[in-house]
Image 1 (tube, one colour):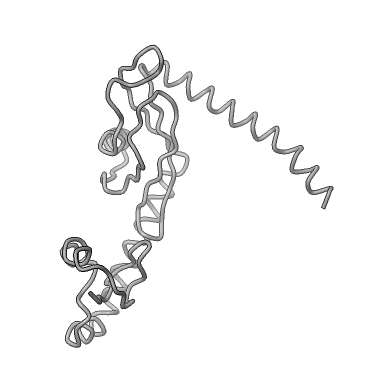
Image 2 (cartoon, one colour):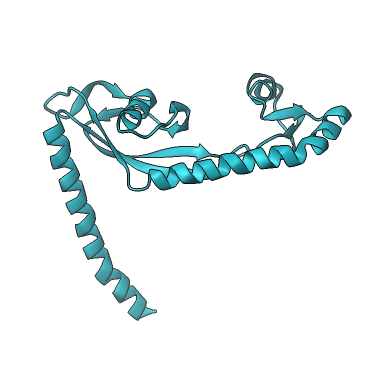
Length: 180
């Protein structure tokens, strides 16, 4: 089915692009979510008439996403869970848990913005991508621990490890620069 995109859709196209997609994807996702229109002559004319309004709406969403990304820069969320001695969780940490932890810390965020490939099943600190807009994303750290004290220890160890890695990388970068 050929459609016209009403907004930027990741891995598909930008607003105004005519693209060919599978019928089910268009009928079940793009059309009900108002992300696209069927590419008929009437819809093409309607899109051209509404283009300025759609671009203004997209610009406002983009600006809002950029503001939220700046607010979340360097952010880390703590999720407290029970776990075995081996560090394996009794259950898992999902998108819903991460969004709830972010909201509890005072930053309003819908769970649809959290992009997690698979649930977290072990204690530790994990980078999690937030897709705030098709063109704007931010990575935060999620600290999964048994207690708040353990979370602080993990964060301190993670920061020390990051600092050590930066110190080790600095002489290697200088040596590489001198070699070139």
